[in-house]
Length: 340
Image 1 (tube, rainbow, N blue to C red):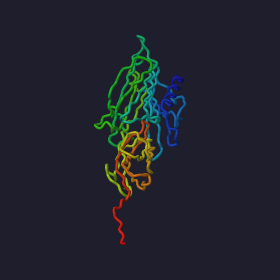
Image 2: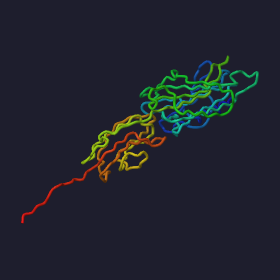
Image 3: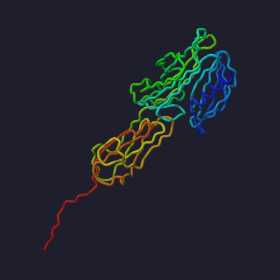
Image 4: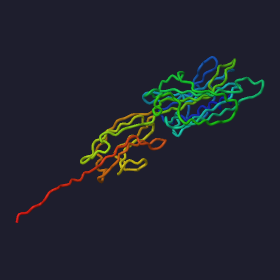
């Protein structure tokens, strides 16, 4: 049992890459079933590795929860992973992946797909084997954060059960989800999480328990605007001050302004104007900035385009665009006469 437990704890620690930054502290909490007695298996858990449980496993089994605490202001606590182990219940491993390489908590954008790898081992099929050893239940829950929420302090018991299925075979399967099913009228502005869990069946020794569980955060699609210049405007003197408004910038994104000669064409590479915003937080952010003093980036008259672009793990997206005509030459009409 100790070898099995060591393997479970190793899966807990390595199944989710905890933050290596100094602001994060990780720990494992053990809950004895069915009594519900809890014990912190370790005060500090490294980003990878393995260790033995502090308590023996009762016939009802035990649940292990992997938590991480972000000690930056304000202090935030996240449940990263959960596993249940007992003498005959199978082992499950759930991994959620997306196009975003961030690994502290899996995340993606509301318009992007994500993937769930479910691996089951240890299922039995004998006529005398107990029912909890023959199959498990796979659950998908969704939960909205609201219009501006970040998931801090969320009550996950209020999540909506979206679907469930029975798994009765060992092995790995990969599920592809094209879009999130979190509730929301504006599908581009979804904020919330999807949780995928494998549960054991209830028996006389223990209730149905989480064998493994992982969630992915869904963040909204950013949008923005450029004010100070209107489409088709004729500019004859100094370039006006711009007001750049950005909503729901994706975590770890970079946003900037670029200009190029001609009408708007997606994918055009222009000259980068002297303003940018690098967003390094783990949740979306909105901002308003003023931009001025960029006259010398426009070296000739004619039609010009300014774009507001954001760079995310999913590529480069245009948030706003404006085109205008520049005519800074002074034309003098007159005549010269002489008296002879």
